[in-house]
Image 1: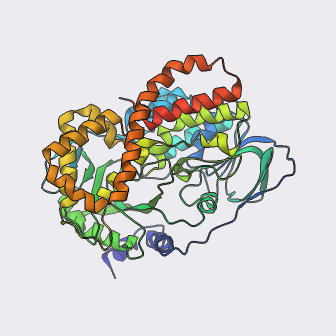
Image 2 (image 1 turned 90 degrees about the horizontal axis):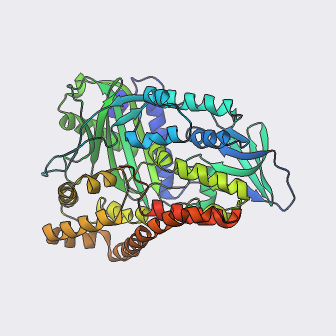
Image 3 (image 1 turned 90 degrees about the vertical axis):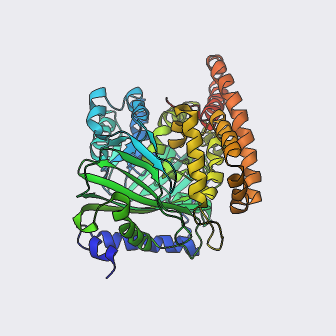
Length: 515
């Protein structure tokens, strides 16, 4: 029996079976054997909607649902199971949580109660490189159970309706609405929000079986028995390449122990390792990483998953009146796990934008596409993802990725928090990126040239287009803000379009970042 099977088989809830089911899905994705569902159809008959919005997927969909119900819209939320947060905290930066207060979803007291852990400082370090310490970055652990239950009760009090144990099955798009079948329920709605995540059947149909361009594999656990440590790790590497993967680590205090993750960036090649093999490496390396014998640890729970990313992201709507949101939209960068943090970052923009779309009846594909716009700040990170991964048959120096990252982060630290902190929160801004690239090129010119064969010329040329667009958006964003008051005098539909362009410039340039 492997170490992974031995430890996981002792935990309640059959995590070993869940790991192997996730592995079967990962293998099907790598080998191109995932079936393409056909759950969305179109018909030309008229429909009389009795809902404004039906949200499919409640775990994070409830955040948008509550915001829309608060504004008076008729919202139904369908969830295949019970709407309940997981036991493991969601990590985020404190200032990002203010959106819940701004939208009226939580009171100040409730927000404080939702915070389960709060630690400082956090470390960034790569093999043979210096340690870099930062404060107030992804250092807040939010209790998902309390957060979702509180927002769910608010959603219900505002007239929203929740349908649990009601899995989405099919949708038929009509000229004036969408008919939705979910479990034993049927809905006629003006708009469908798909919040079912990376493997939403709607998204799978829209992407037509396309393999992801990149994947992040993650395994980890929460355990007790570690030496006392109130600090965290944002991204740490202490090994060279292994199995054609560069291993990165994350760690932070949790309510009931210490959480540690091992993650790696790769493509979906059939020869990539399984999640169970990665978990075996995690258990093998964990004692060296945390300076503790494995026998001293008492595992509370284990965590694992894989997160596909596509260059064609955010995903544009495939039909009128259906909008992918959250992980369904792929609105996170290929460096981010997505999930809670990505949804919170866009929560105000999406809540306001969907409200405007409903008010102005701008619900066709073209109008909804503006709610998931092209973001050059997101697209430039594809070069970074390629630089942090290596192909199955590619040969590079074993420590090349560590040396590159160590040099880049050293330059960012020297440039200060206005450069370093946004990047660590997955926000790319042109001035900060420009300074970092110039400083790194001057400090390590030989290392930079080594990256070219690794990432490829096509990737570099594509990146240069997005880099130029990032500069353009950085210039357009302040112009959009200046013209915002003028837009109030526009008719509803032109006003909707203009405001979405302003949002695209702002978020595309990383100027939504809260210092």
